[in-house]
Length: 221
Length: 221
DNA sequence: CCCGGGTTCCACCCGTGGGTCCAGGCCTCG
DNA sequence: CGAGGCCTGGACCCACGGGTGGAACCCGGG
Image: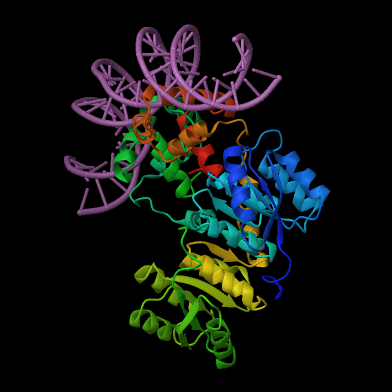
């Protein structure tokens, strides 16, 4: 978060993507930018590590899907051995796993590939300055996983479930088939099915999968 | 995430801070920036809402601690009634509660007050482009709260699941039957069943109910 | 006392789910 | 070019799940 940034020396950037059709034009267009100097282009993680070892690097623009050594693992090693190098992820995938893995590995930015040139340049500058830039959808997903927890305490099940029905729902939530539930409750499978039919109707549950979700959401499992 | 950004019209920015000693110099120095036009300075949330109602605004630079109507609530209203206006929080406090509350309310950036002018300008530009900029410490805290929960319980899925298999598992976790999954993915039901069989074998999942639990535990649903 | 709800169980039907085997198209890698 | 992985699809089988319509028992309360 230092003041003198924009007008000092150009930023030394490494571009990493296994697809040459993406990597080469990207490197070329970035290199045209005033304060950006693309010092290397790598097709996998090892290429990135080599480039960082070879000379001083400010920012690595990293694809996640790469052969041999992928972006996550490369990011992890960089933040271990070269914490002064900022990693910005640029990938087509924006699923929770990838986002959490990348940021957890130490990435200082996460862009999807529908980001424009200006978006990428801005993220590189921010990362070099110690800031972190996320695409809108990425931040939304990150936030969604944060707030997925406190809602779990809600009891959105109807109150008129009988104790036995609750018990059955709990066991369904644990993934047990009807036979196992029957054995556990010392009743016949037919009885379990009756309870299930009743509680499905009461709680507006469509099928077993739905029941599992509701049981977990209600804190029964 | 649109391409033409930097060189178009200047960004219309509202500065909100209850302390005049912070607000005025900040507004002045930002107004000096080429592509930034400070159209209003507000001392509380109502001032911000008035300014947004009065004319088009691209970005609000928002302090959290303000009298009458604080930054969180103002952000919430803006993202409800004026989702086209991006909010960047600028505050001295970087505790978990404030960060989560602000981002949850719809803020597209979170800076602490040791951010320099360039950092603030960069965050404003990013927010206007739909990106999100966080201070390094803010991202670290956000990540820590995410990682406190789901990493402990989740992520016990084998890594060799194909993207398609993950996708199918996610939809199973949402309670969808095979036919609905097939329609959603534009493939036949037979294909869905193949993916399911493969991923069940890989991830040691017994049946659909089990799959729902695992998907939720892994944070896919 | 009998009515009602909860619990237990039966028989039957049939749709979906889960498992197996196979096969073609596509891509990447060696 | 061949090998192998991924995605796609079809065929078949059978078990489990879900729905229906019963029926019996026990218990508490109007």
